Image (cartoon, rainbow, N blue to C red):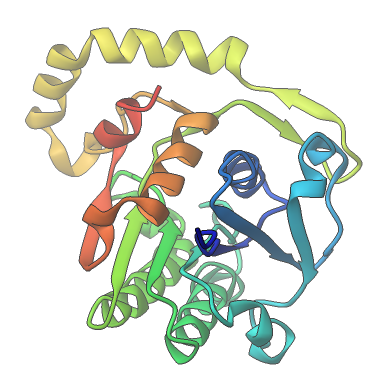
Length: 247
């Protein structure tokens, strides 16, 4: 009996907080060939436990030539790159959160990849004015994803604040759960109240009172978006409620 062909899934930003957790989960799937593309290329120290189950590639999102061959034969591409939603240089933030995503999505379309999953965020409307470059960049990315959906499956995963253990570039761990996990629990059990309060001033509070979500649940949502057949066509947004189902 012929062995089933592996599904190749390429993750951009695999060295990052969410991207590395996505790769960790993909590495446990016997039917998946996991590929990471990042500027660094090599696996970071905190990925040592599964590094040998992932192909680590060097590539620059803005330069398609550096990763075009990695997309050949891929079933899905994950884009988890960008800068945080902070005030600052508008054009730089737009490029970091928009053009980086757009270039990868365009390259995936050219390579006839069947599915694209982008990690976005759930934010209050007023943050668009505070972090204009971030908002414009994400808008550019979502427009490109909409174009991708005309010929394949396009998914945007929109978490609220994410907690877990982050790692600095030098590998130093920063645990966020001790503070954010209790807050998440409190906001979850208080959903009826926070929903009512948000309804009183949606332009101010919409997205602000969403419970933080654990990084493992965000990553599992991304993995499901890559593999489950219900996401094979069209454009789908998976928000906090969908992510919380995977806690």
